[in-house]
Length: 307
Image 1 (cartoon, helix red, strand yellow):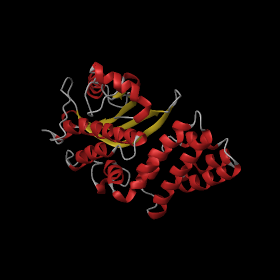
Image 2 (cartoon, one colour; image 1 turned 120 degrees about the vertical axis):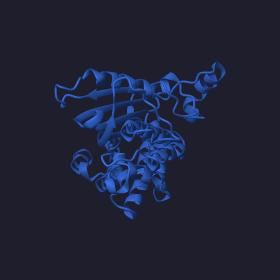
Image 3 (cartoon, rainbow, N blue to C red; image 1 turned 60 degrees about the horizontal axis):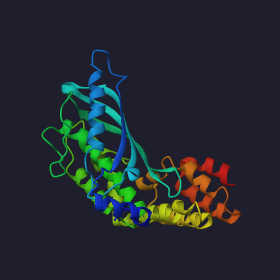
Image 4 (cartoon, one colour; image 1 turned 60 degrees about the vertical axis):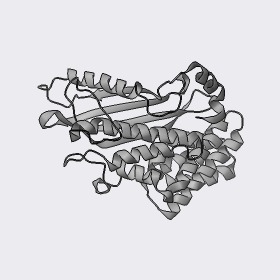
């Protein structure tokens, strides 16, 4: 049962009513301003609508999601160039939030830009995805849905991790299956270890490698023992977040500079700072010491907020 006591009553009601709501409430934007005027831009409006339907109207898990539980997701495709046979090179920015208990606040689960999103699209072509045949019949057309599906499964994994200990494992395995069977072409990048050090391969490698198991414990502690307690147990909540940072620091000490550690902090520096603003001097000091080791790009911000 998803999200344990937070949604127990809703799930009981949903079970009797037979509700099988989809998991995502996604917004999709496709920007093609950088393409020459000779290319008809209307097709990208059609693509935008097709991807919206592909994400929002498909079941991505066997779990029941109530309307108020759907995961808020933003996909932004910024097309930079076109090639032969209706192929395009673009960046894909993916953002998703997780609601914090007893608040209207959405904490960032993912805030990531993928710089290697290559795909083929002809207006009105159906968007097909079959996890048993990820490669499809044509690599660039298949890559369009494979990459979107990959990030949806990563998001589901992180969301379930945040509500139950190791709850995201089945979805990380689905994302790994996409990586292992990804469309293959010379101009499709990001699925292989040698394509870079911060790509889809390394993200799911980190999320499924037992060497980094503590990262999953950290997600759970950060949300369930941390943020979800902020409303009525603020001191305990800070302890939960501090425990999560200690877990991440253990991973960082054993294997510095892994992708998943940097991934965790993307878009999260303001949130973490605010958690410790009202902390005791000792707790602030411990948090600052950990954060300056874990999130180097935001060292100055943490020093300014927490010293």
